Amino acid sequence: MSAINMRDVALFAALSDGALDEITAAMPISRWPAGSVIYQEGEPGDSLCIVREGTIEVIKALNTAEEWLVRRMGPGNFVGELVLLEPGSIRSATVRALTDVEIASLGRAEFDALLAHQPHVAAELMETLSRRLREANDSTIRDLRQKNSELETAYRALQEAQAQIIEKERLERELQLAHDLQQSMLPRELPVAAGYDFGAMMTPAQAVGGDFYDFMDLGAGRIGIVVADVSDKGMSAALFMALTRSLIRAEASRGVSPPEALRRVNYHLLDMNESGMFVTVLYGILDTTSGDFLYARAGHELPLVYDRSGATVAVPVSRGQPLALLPDPALDE
Image (tube, rainbow, N blue to C red; front, side, top):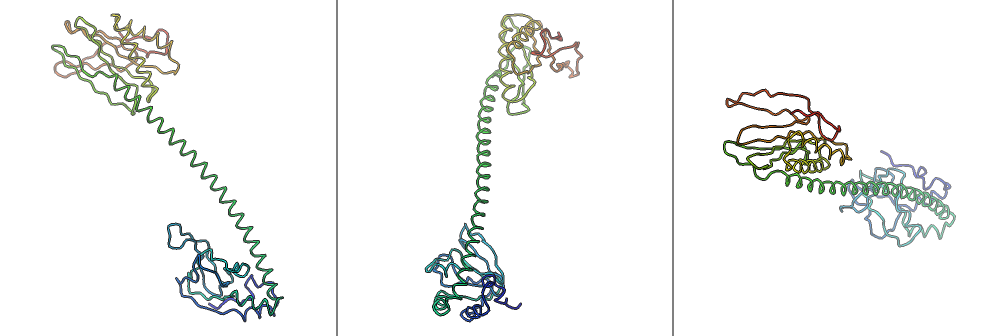
């Protein structure tokens, strides 16, 4: 590939032929193999470099964790123009050869000599450089505004993400508290009665559910048994479950029948229920002396009954409706 004609370099586009010849004569040519560092960020600048052939890379913070590629530049592009306008300036980035390159250099000393002997040529070049710097500054300002806008967007996104994390942590703490509350309300010990074996297991659909069971010693060999399920899941269901459990225990302690207890629980739930939830319940009383189990079912799953051989036993079924929905729900008794 042949080197670019210096007339095609944007820096020299406005110069007269005579001025261009003067400048070209003062510019030595150097060749750099791919991978060579032409000049290093932070070192004093002493020349403007024009790419005649090949491609260079302009890199900030080379060989550090913050390294980033500013741009790649091909034939006709130039870097280091600040050296000619501001003596003693420091290189603001590293320039490295991406491919084999040919560079034409205009040093500060050559420029000063040109300024002394051919001031009109230097003046033309200074005007061109000043215009290019103004354009570069305008471009930099646009880039900074764009980056500021992107940073503001990223900051808002970060704030939203942080708020979501805080909310998630708050919900997790509340769920853990609700879970602990739910577990604390389940019976720690199962009833013990001659001739009977009791067992219980509950696996919530979520970390905190609305399912619960309970056993109550009602005296005179009678044991109250409750299996229930609140319509929702999560913390609100656990709290509604706690309310329902407390009401059932309160009514059961009065010694009323299962249907009467559930009707009174329904009355209280309707009065206190602002969440719109409901609960299905099976509540029964086992008489361990007679073996009778009298229960009422408010919309809950049917109980499974097995005989001694393990075969299922059909139980009478009538309609049952959940509690906390209707003033007088139908109960399966």
